Image (cartoon, rainbow, N blue to C red; front, side, top):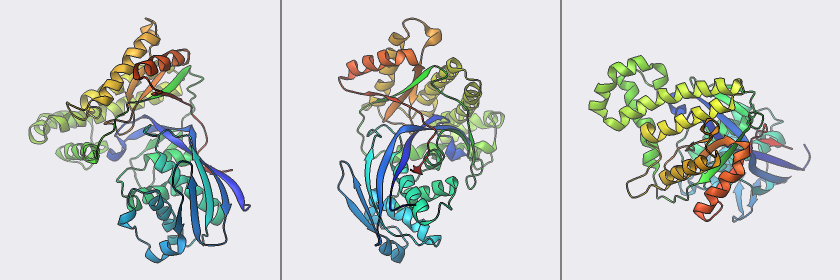
Amino acid sequence: MGKNFKAFAPGRTEIAGNHVDHQHGIAVTGSLKQGISADVELRDDKIIHINSEGFEPFDVDIDKVAEAMAPDPSKFNTTEALVAGVAHKFIEAGVPISGFTANCSSTIGAGMGLSSSAAFELLIAVILNDAYASGKFSKMELAQIGHFAEVEYYGKPCGLLDETAISYGGIIKINFANPEVLDVKPIDFSFERAGLGAVLVDSGAEHGDISHMYAAIPGDMKKVAEMCGVEFLNETNISTLSKNLMNAEKVLGDKAANRGINYFHEINLTKERIKAMEAGDGKLFMQLHGLSGSSSAQFLQNVTVSEEDQQATLCQAICELCLDQACEGDYTNRGASRIHGGGFGGCMQVFLPIEQVSKFCTLVNEIYGREAATEIQFSDTGATTL
């Protein structure tokens, strides 16, 4: 590899399998044309210099990372921490890395839930992998390196879904049954061929720290699994849950029981969406997406934050209103919406017929009085150097 080159890491969207990865279920993801690009110049020293549009530039000293080989708590939730975490794993593997300068620009919109932090981790990982490790690390190994940086150095407890989606690229099915060695398979599906468009609608929600609300979902599901005599819900079935459901409701409460039910409902809907995608059936996919959205709001309960804060719920209502208008009375060809990603804010993910995208976005933006709706496009490209 030459001294100067380009690198790119895409954003990602979760297509199916919401909040099932932590229960070792099955999810479908897609990489996007939106992402983070970098012009890279290798350096002769041990400094990684990052210059990103709209942000203050910063340096990470590789020698200091090697000396500490531990995260700096004062750097939690910073981009510097992500760089240091990725460098840590290369140093740990015995790779003689040196510095580089990366001039970065991003087309991942703020607040859209397209996993910009995971994209940045994988951008740094592929630069170091191709520049100093002769590309020896596999896509899964690079995903694990990025995940390590996110969890240990950035301080964000999360699963491996985001990094896997971005590292592999394309539309893929991820089976989390064995978290150490994920089973990743591509799905031969094109939304464009199926006549579908995809839109994200920004709810505009600005919350305080609601990490406890995200953490409560896997916590509740894990408690339900234990009531069924297993560690994770993928180790049991709906029949066993049914036998233990009312006991779970009495002991754990209504919300935990609802979330246990949602896991199996979402897993079933994910499997059916995979079948629809493999058959190229866009209409069936939209119907199943709508059922998933309803289940998320009613049973998983990851849309509304509180009685006073329902911006995401309002966003979904606006999406449904505009989908009604965009389909012009043809409900056999109507799109569907659901909360995107972890939930409790962020944006709505909408799949709808391509010919309705423009009208839908116009309607949504007129209501919000801003560019709330953004069309997203899928790509086969994962994190890579060019």
